[in-house]
Length: 213
Ligand SMILES: [Zn+2]
Image (cartoon, rainbow, N blue to C red; front, top):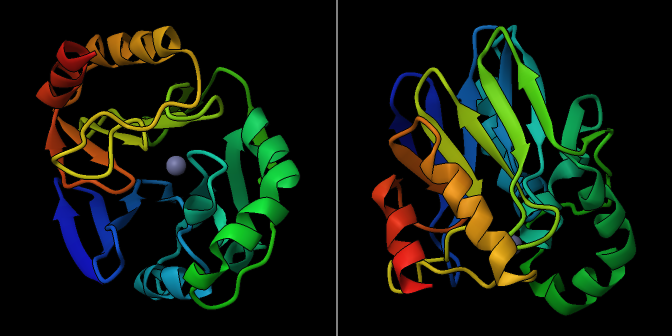
């Protein structure tokens, strides 16, 4: 597990011993800690839990989309608020078995279905921490992004491809919908992008993707 400090209050945890890198991002807000995605199971999350165990801030968990490699560790946070898009909750429910069957060799520790317990449609804003969650369909229909307005860091999960040779992600919705999401990103104030699998990137990657499309 690689751990990188990002700006003032972000910590990026990366599993770098798999076929692909897997990122989990922690924002240490004034009021809450925000854990973005839960990886492949309890062992993906243990590091992060230990990292914040002596901290008196509340832990808020966010699922960026329903895919297995982003929600399998949810069971480690049963006493927390777990937030996602409404569709994400529906899709975890309907696709769980299929995702388990196809990818069970990637389970890392204990994996159990634990659904998001707070869902939203368009946007949710944590005023004291200046953390904005908003719907950004593209990679999947339920994808959301998280803007840390104080650090000017955008967490856009799998709306960017998995590595530097593939910055365009797989898109499971209309291409136009994804382009609208990218245009929305371009109008926002941030300079660093954190994704689900890629390296830490600068804002200009959004324009690069639009050029390719
Ligand atoms: Zn995905």
